[in-house]
Amino acid sequence: MNRPDFTLSAGPVESWPEVHAALTLPTMYHYDPSFIALFKETQQKVQRLFGTTNDVVLMQGEAILGLESSARSLVYPGMPVLNLVQGVFGKGMGYWLRNFGAEVHEIEVPYDRAVSPDVVDDYLSKNPDTELLVYCASETPSGSISDLEGLSRVAKRHGVVTLVDAVSALGSVSLDVDSLGIDVCVSGAQKCLGGTPGISLISVSDAAWSVIRNNPEAPKDSYRSLLDWKDKWLDQEVFPYTPLVNEIYALDAACQVALAEGMESVIERHRKASRVARAGVEAMGLDLWIEDSSALGSCVTSIALPERISHDEIRTSVRRDYGVMISSGQGAGNFVRVSHMGPTATLLHPILAVSALGRSLVDHGMELEIGRGVDAALEYASSIRE
Ligand SMILES: *Cc1c(COP(=O)(O)O)cnc(C)c1O
Image 1 (spheres, rainbow, N blue to C red):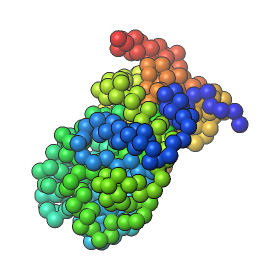
Image 2 (image 1 turned 45 degrees about the vertical axis):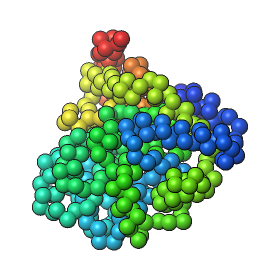
Image 3 (image 1 turned 90 degrees about the horizontal axis):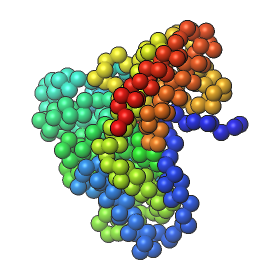
Image 4 (image 1 turned 90 degrees about the vertical axis):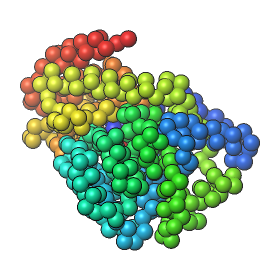
């Protein structure tokens, strides 16, 4: 099959040319002093992107490994845990937490909304023995975000340890791990950083390390072990196993691109791209799947479809007929998602995605004013250009 003309799906996303170039460098021996220096510099770059002085572990596998490993490391059988569910990843985390033996309570809302920090505050006041609060900062499968500041304030007030899925939040919302007081923050390079899906980025606070160290169930001598990375690499500079050398080159390059631009500018670029997409979608006569504007994120735009047109069918048609890869609703509902992450968080990529989508919907019998949508998106893009 031919390659896509444009990859505007919800991740992995198109990666930066600097990342491709880095991947092609010759593989080095992992104890070469030059690789050790690079590995440490990459860790420091991730710390800067996270806004943290906490330890950073670069675990070898896409972000799901980091999320599973963090949850396994923190949770002991019977641990009282509060899990917030406003999307597919929050839901999946709940299955893991129960599997690992936690006593899980969930606050769940429809996936086009965000959990209110007040409800969390109320629960924690009534259940002061809760030890861990888990949530997803940006639900990529539906395009919603959490109230990070509000949830952090509540977590601090009640002194609970926090585990946050920030995979698509890093680069699309303001995420300052230390000022938010996030204990374990997990992200990846393959979303807003425009890197490749090979390494989990995990920051771990001292408080989280002590929970993990006191947990007899925390994995040790295992590929999933955070403690191995702490005891062997962070404390003794011995790798627990051979690092994915070229993936580290790629991660370093993706971090470098973000740091050279500046994280605030990266976030602003994602915000602007999402506004362009919304302007186009609404003027064309389509509806955003998320109505509550405070819950709208900037990494993907979710567009509601009429019941008679299936999201999977549209995703296939847009790719086949117009060469653009977008995403379907991934189990959250009948909608499609266009992403604007990494190198595609520009003013024009969302217009391309929205016009290809619009035309495909017209092909399926909908009446839309594609031209009006494109005009409105361009008008908005023009009004915010620098
Ligand atoms: C992408 C993503 C993950 C990790 O999933 P993979 O696609 O397997 O890397 C986890 N959580 C969120 C919110 C994500 O967007």
